[in-house]
Image (cartoon, rainbow, N blue to C red; front, side, top):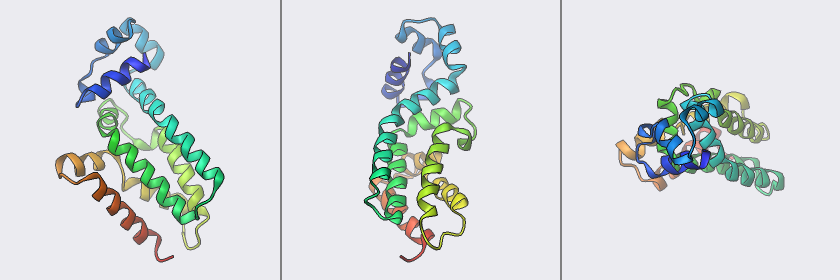
Length: 175
């Protein structure tokens, strides 16, 4: 079911227009089965996002455990990885918001990003509140903002990544 939903969302430039009926048919199950398994459309979209994030999370965990980068570099790498994910999955992330995942702060993947970023920020001297700073930095790469800048404003993804790097430098102050 998850693979069918992911394939349909990936093939659509507007994942919010993919119906539960279409997903059920592609998965070879009844629509009721989808609702029993995922609860609602938001739950299904959240599960697809989580499955797409798994490989990235594993890579990030491995990099964090190796700790070859400075804490500041880890902050940059974490935010860049999250931004790249949001750029690549901006239609799905927008569909999540349209499906009723009204607050990104309640999403499981947000909690994971925040925790790992806060941990890196805790190691940086001069960061007043790692908890708040993690939230503030993640707010700069909200999916709706990423979609707006790229799709509505025509910003190139590489320019967005460079702007984020400059913003992080400004937010964290001089090394």
